[in-house]
Length: 427
Image (tube, rainbow, N blue to C red):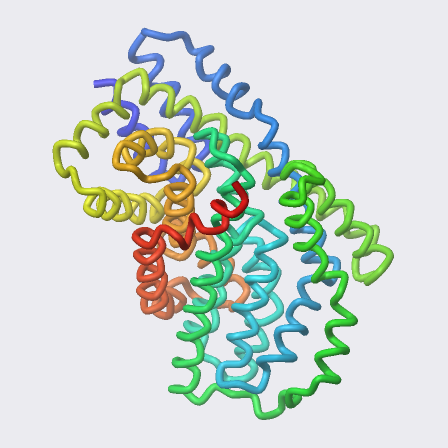
């Protein structure tokens, strides 16, 4: 009965468009009051203990680092580097968008931030060159989802907090899947652009002199992932310390090297970062309580027993979980979904011999696809705003791209080395 009340009130709040964090908290409170088993202070305890984690300190720093680097000229220089190689090819600007999103993914850790930083520069240019709005917006939204797959990644930090998995191993596991999805999107962009004749004949032809110039201008931007990830895997600092280093680096480079970052911008940047961080922390705290109530009601055990009764095949089990996660990604915020579902599904897949790191990558890729699936695809909304397009237009362009990304997900799910090769080397 309490489970029905919990999910029923949660669904009602979502239908009423109450923010996800408040919906989780209010539905948890209603369930607590109706059961009478625990006191309302249980919610407050969940809010505190959910956020009381050292790895979580990386979240506000990575959010702030992404804001600083988007404004400080780093994203623009990453675009220039990609353009020097790809500008004259069919769909050159779309290819530049995908590659630049992959570069920026190694900085921001956030899908919507990647779409805003890169799409704000490339979508208007694509439209000016004659690209159709559905494709321009959709390919940028899809490429932005790589922001949570290639490390650093805020959802990977969340998964590590929820399951106790190594943040460093999760980061390593995201490299090859992120590159795979990026290459797939590039192949689709080339095919689509050649079919529609999208090529910029006015783009500068490839030359090593131009490559040398953009590399010289963008060397400080290229050093960001080297410093962050090299420092983590070189044992110089932890992922949390790496996030703080990224903030300091972005601030110094933006203010004193590129000088695109102005002191007057800092108030807006810090404000945006604080708002995003507060939203994530509220979701984390309320999702923790929501998950604890599910545990009290033995929901994880019931789900585990259900899957065990349905199949004893690892292949079928992972397929069912993928389908469920793809559906969940359409309706639930990524961080909330990870905090609630990861502890439920991990014991089930571990019993079938699936490594926690591999399952974490599968889960993050699943929910990254949720960034571009309506009705809650946040990357789609960011792309709509930048392209000045309706959601229906962007959704028209995203459908075939979703097919490409789901094929990548299947490969990541069933070919273990994609997720486990690099973590295996590090261990």
